[in-house]
Length: 133
Image 1 (cartoon, rainbow, N blue to C red):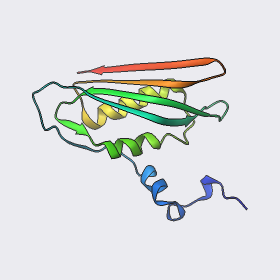
Image 2: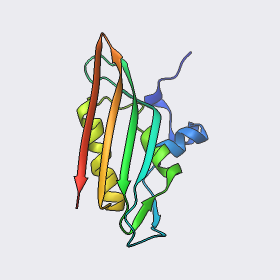
Image 3: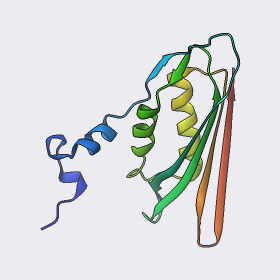
Image 4: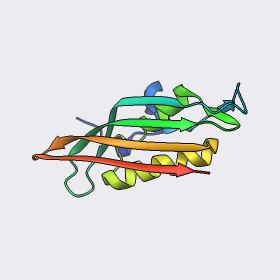
C-alpha cells in the first residue's frame, strides 16, 4: 500500500521534508554596509510541476543581488527553493515569486533572478526579472 503525500501528517514527515515545509528566507546583518558589492548564487537543482500537465519542470535558478542592510542565509534559501518541488506553478510565476519573496526578506539595493528551465518538447525557456531600489 502506498501513501499519498497529501495524507501524510507533519509528524509522519521525514526531517528533511519538515525542514523544507518550514523553510523561509532568513537574513543576517550585512557585514559591509555602505560598500556596494554583488552576491551571485546558483541553484542548479530547482524543480516544480507544470500546472497544466503535472510533469516535473527543472531549472537552474541564478540569483544576483547587492545587499543593503541584510544578507540572505544560504541554508534558508536552499530550503525555500526546495519548497517549490511539489507546487504546480508556471515558469513565469516561479521567477517573479522568488524575486518578490527575496526582496520582501532582505530589501536589497538590486536583485536579479533568472530561471533557466531545462528544455522539454524542444522548447527552452529563460526568464529574468530585476528589482532596483
